[in-house]
Image (cartoon, rainbow, N blue to C red; front, side, top):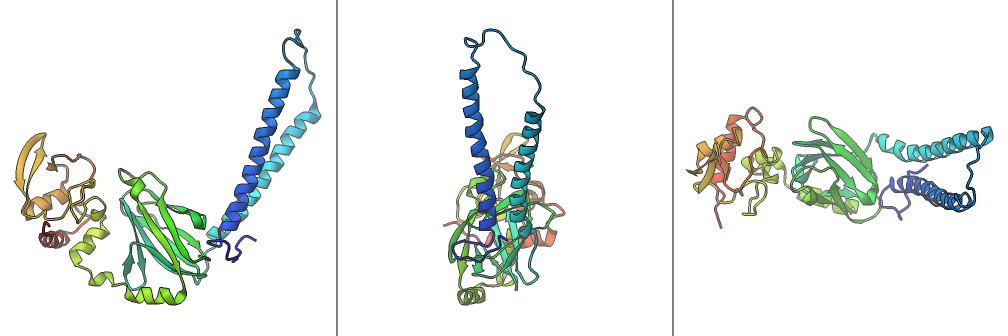
Length: 310
């Protein structure tokens, strides 16, 4: 009923969600005004000055039946519109284009067939797409307001969201589950383009296999969400020019100067709370021991050696 392809909507989910919202809001607003007006009228009509002596009100079965049946009907009406808006969201078309979506503190990553990865969600117009979503760290929630779709992204669980983009343009993607320090900066863009433009864009996206292996491993494990590559201070120290630098760390609360070498980087990955760089907080980074293989850690270290300080 509400999976219309009217181009006035940004996606096929908009009309159903908006209709449910207007129905529920309208009923709620009507009763807010109505009940408030009745309360004011009762205050005026039954004020103590007009009725100094209390009168026992007899039971009225018809009234009691009415205020039970009418709210039940209204609740069922709201449920009906909510259900017919929600039901299509769970009915994923078999031919929907699959885009794997990874959430991590504090960014989104979208993977297309051929191991092609983008920080933006690029979509061809009028084609069904299903996002297969998971998180590398904490609970996130992907929300595209213009499409009226929202779904939690949970570590260890693959959740799904599907829709058909029906209007060209750029639409904001937000995380609506508080996920830490930079939660409010966890945003991206859903870019809806023509099918011809999409195919050309997809051909131009390099495969992740062609990316530097060390950088790829770090991105897969959400390292770049907390450590910048350009010197910007985030949750943890920047990776830019880190190798060979002398830093002050706190070991059991005692300031100690250490040189960032291969051994230090290894310790920081497997036991991040042992040597915390001064000015940063303990307990923010989990241990990656057993999560990232030792040879992959060495690959990361070799990559960090190449990041020169500007």
